[in-house]
Length: 324
Ligand SMILES: CC(C)(COP(=O)(O)OP(=O)(O)OC[C@H]1O[C@@H](n2cnc3c(N)ncnc32)[C@H](O)[C@@H]1OP(=O)(O)O)[C@@H](O)C(=O)NCCC(=O)NCCS
Image 1: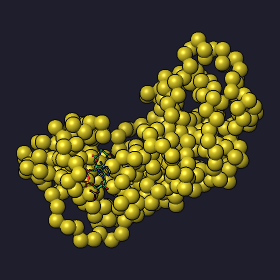
Image 2: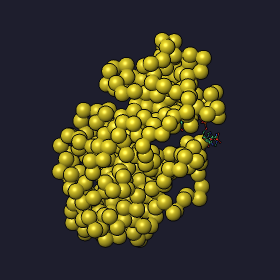
Image 3: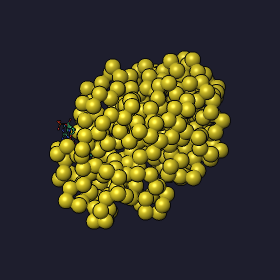
Image 4: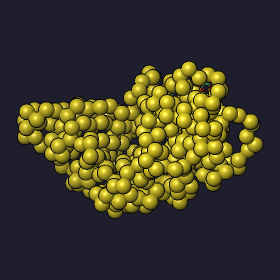
């Protein structure tokens, strides 16, 4: 992508006709198996058929049968702005809009690094047209290109393949619903303490009855100190059952005592026993979970970078609209 057009859209962005994706172009630049509106998929599930299915369902509000997001919502709210896709043999740019939050997400696929000024201009234009209030740029690096510096804007995408369930050593981990009342009651405080890791949301979903899948917990002195769940399987786009990404965390004061690894072992045991073939997880670079997953032999599928982009205020938008 040339930097020459940083104040306006690059020439190709305005001349390439709007098309749906060509498999040969897209697959050559999709260096990480991550697709708009669905997120990470198993490499074997990234197929021309998947792209066709995404196209067919786009904007209908219906979920694809394998879409993990249907756990949390009734309507598929993220749509691909098909008319704005930029597609060449070497680069593909796919914007999506989450209507409820007014968030624009721009997926940049290539073997290189994005031209940020040029993409920021495009994001301004699309945000103005769609009324987006927030925007994010996502781009991808293959497994061999580990980021030099740690940072929250980059996550490692990992694959765990399950084998036949092995003997599980005795541990304090078990299904929350089978714990004594005192321990069950302590889950609310645990969820509150780990709200940033998604447990407050999960607790709320459990409370309203939206989720009745098991949550595995580690217990100390009748108190939940760690959890992983909900434990749910769902066929992937190729029909292979996978474990859906669970929330996973241990209270700060109970860390480094083996609860995290025990929860992880219990989760993969549960998944294999329930017919799941694999799990995809995304983990922060340099964090404890990355060390844990690497020590457990997970395979790296690549890196996903995210950068927030502040859409230009309306006054600036009207002048940049003129360029488009
Ligand atoms: C990741 C987490 C669940 C680990 O829980 P834990 O109870 O501390 O884990 P364990 O004591 O079983 O440690 C297991 C391994 O994790 C790694 N690990 C845990 N804490 C670590 C730290 N602070 N620094 C480096 N490695 C660490 C080590 O490999 C450790 O093995 P070791 O003790 O043999 O060296 C916990 O740190 C946590 O809740 N973090 C915040 C939420 C989170 O990141 N969740 C994962 C989302 S993908």
